[in-house]
Figure 1 (cartoon, rainbow, N blue to C red):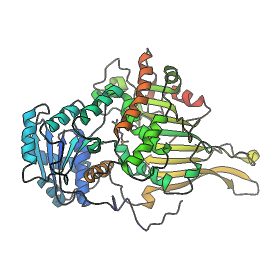
Figure 2: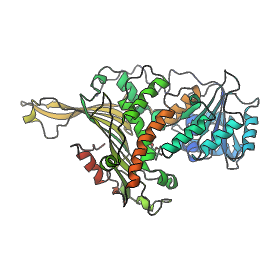
Figure 3: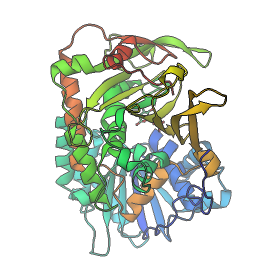
Figure 4: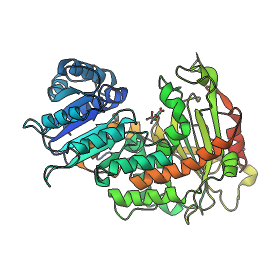
Length: 509
Ligand code: BG6
């Protein structure tokens, strides 16, 4: 077990060492929806518990549904009750509710933005504004344009600010992402736009940078000279979970790879930034995305696999196949699984394959990054190695059993030199007792204080879509059914073939 000095506990301290936001008015469009209920309000509640909301934070929920303030507050309180990581304290919950109001609005109706403006520029509301687009994506440009038209997109005076958080999906392909960037930029400056990717708010994802750049011993090894291959797995046991109508138009490539998985690749592969500040970090991440070799049609056939789940058993329970899920077209060819090999054509990574796989209804929920090192140049103990001796492997376990594990060979006690594989483990839960803050807590707070390091910049999102679009184009040309895999397994055989071409195997998380 790695020794950890428990002088301070960053998880327990939560988001320690940061300033609190200025007084601000937080306007959530789509406040009656699932995301607001499951993530945003519980995050606001927990930020309030930890005293992060500053002296004055007013919340306005905006949606089509005709609630009054009372009904809305009751529903929000119930959502917090159900989804907060902490059991709500009635006094704190009341304080949050006192600051929460509701406005019924049709997102297309200019007059309603005018009355929203009259309300939030009135004497009761702080003049810093944070807008959150938690609506269906078609409404993003509409809301942005209306905010601009009623003069809410820019601050009243230089000491005030206006920011806008945009949820995923950010576009459906490269063209739509470029168009959305263009529409947002007609109203907001890039510095005001916070494109959210909740993976960047996860503690263990942020720890990738700390692990690499706050320690002296790993970075010298972090190159093609020592690393043989990298495997990134984002496995889910859940199916489409009631989101069939969205998911069937998206699929695993758009839903998980374009954003979360390419973010993980960038953090693993980036060069050290010149400073730990927003643009410096994002400059390096963009360079990685631009260095990934785009897929030709031939590469798509050879180095990507997509598949759909069939019925099967998860945790002892039978689950339906993808095509039998609600709101899925009966002849759908949308992938619920994707695996691929990426190559990063730059000085550090040339020739090191990065294998990515993600899927729904896999054997278990597990997100991890496994970095496999090259074997020792000469194997002295070859005669007496046990058969299972494997190359050194560093595994960053993102969820659910957060930690880091290093696999190496050790001498089996006894008179002979026999070598066997053992693991050195660091477990977050053991070293930093207590549940870490939720990703949305961190990201909301960052947007409130104006730190965009963990948000995706325009060029980053477009670089990710450029790569993903090259795969989508290849897939569009392929005809016929797509492969399938049984729910509760680790995916289709085709994915095994993909990785075995280079003599590797998928890891069992
Ligand atoms: C979302 C996807 O962005 O991420 C979902 O739309 C997916 O399909 C989810 O289930 C996974 O997030 P997490 O935090 O549970 O790994």
